[in-house]
Length: 140
Image 1 (cartoon, rainbow, N blue to C red):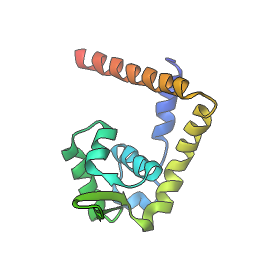
Image 2 (cartoon, one colour):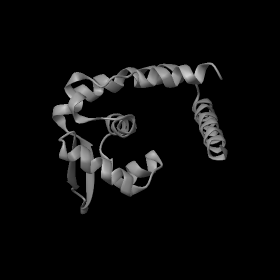
Image 3 (cartoon, rainbow, N blue to C red):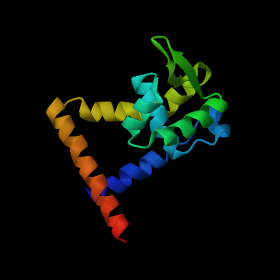
Image 4 (cartoon, rainbow, N blue to C red):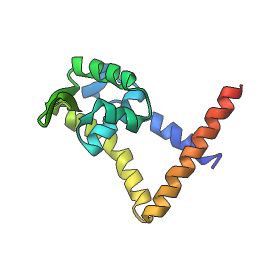
């Protein structure tokens, strides 16, 4: 694992932003937000914040920035007009899919032969690793 994890992270960092999206100043923090919207579909800022495990204000700032640039679309929820639904803007969907699909497909292929319980174990193990790294960073 000590050899594998840095390679995984290194490969993920090599996911270069496609030319169609290069002028938007997208950063790694945007990658997960866009991946959630691409793979799971439109959702509210609150749900995005829960899924990203960050404060709603943080997501709101990212969504606002990406919306002003035309990458994301904010629309009213038909069932509750007070709620805003965030989605990827149609003109950028293809480029974002091309950017993120390879990594998503690789995860699907890796996890597909596992049972739901085994997939849960993989995710739980990676979360514990993340927490351990975070603890060691906070000590230093």
